[in-house]
Length: 285
Image 1 (cartoon, rainbow, N blue to C red):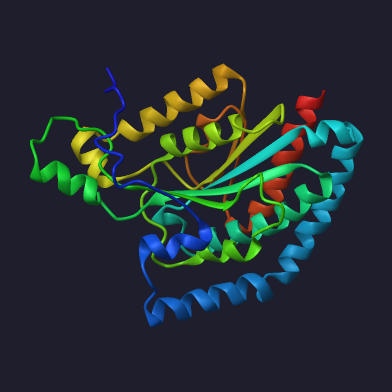
Image 2: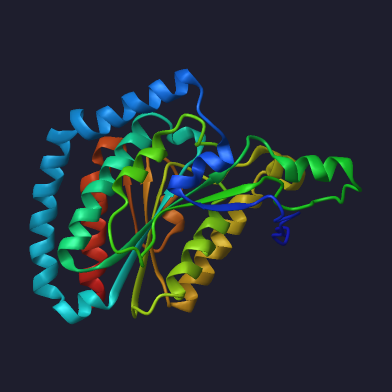
């Protein structure tokens, strides 16, 4: 029987705006700053042809959505995009995720649909201060989650303007660590439930199963996976937030009620636009 999910401590968890990531992770080294600057240049300049092609796809999808959803229905819709910031996303995956978000932001704004962009990771590898506290004190068997969560708000649905430059923070070399997916989905769901729009959609972008070595070592290899499955089932059963996901090359997708799977990060832009269109129009039918 799976262990009941628990959290050893929330004392060291952080929720920050993207512009404040440095207050949690500290200043970048000279080498990491140079790498971030180069990644931003790639995002803003070298991916222009890729973005242009995706924007054309988005314009066609937007026209179909306008035909299916009236202006009032679109104004009563909110979309949240939750991006996995695990270490395996480093490189092309996170670069194309940021580029995709830039295109999708423009796409949703053109439709008059409110949206927010969120990211999730941990502040340290293999357990942070939570694990050290557990080791120093009486150590209960199966303590639950043993790492310090970092949840990032790139754009809130209540923001008046896009914070596009903050998306560049996704490309920090020191940001991508472990991924506690179940708690991230719950966090994103609660944010959506607090919003006034009636149609609420959560899209998860991930490249694999949830992993935090410290938590899995202390609780079993399926602990985080089982929790994510329970969360997805609970959200789906409540029916207040519609869940969908894109899996980049691995196995996370089939857990979600609606999902798409892609083999290459460069396919992410078209796949996400297609998934958003499919979900919005199916709910309008």
